Length: 143
Image (cartoon, rainbow, N blue to C red):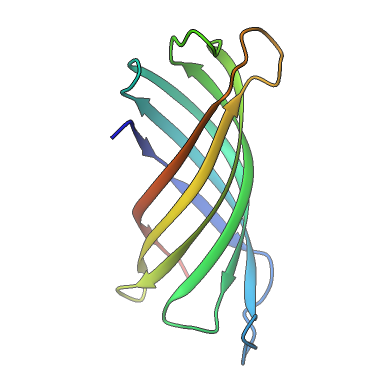
């Protein structure tokens, strides 16, 4: 394990669920996600921030709900790396996964993300940090 990430989120559906979705049918959602990231290698460090994502939930295969998502965010980075300055940083990510309901209000969410962090050349050095993140979590649905 190179890093541990906690990502609390809030999500709202932007489109209505179709009654009888086609094979490609689904719903688009807007997500606000907090990020608390603890890095272990090559040096100990932390980052914290917030991001926004768009998520497309494919609904044809219910109860499973595969999804695709993409988003951007802003972070306060403190990794003490030689090729990436600490301080204000930006993130971009894309991912895919699967949600599976285990009760009327709780679902398991498993996925993978490609995540990039850099400071957009606002200060040097700006080598960027790329990672592939495997995610596993629980979601509580208010509706």
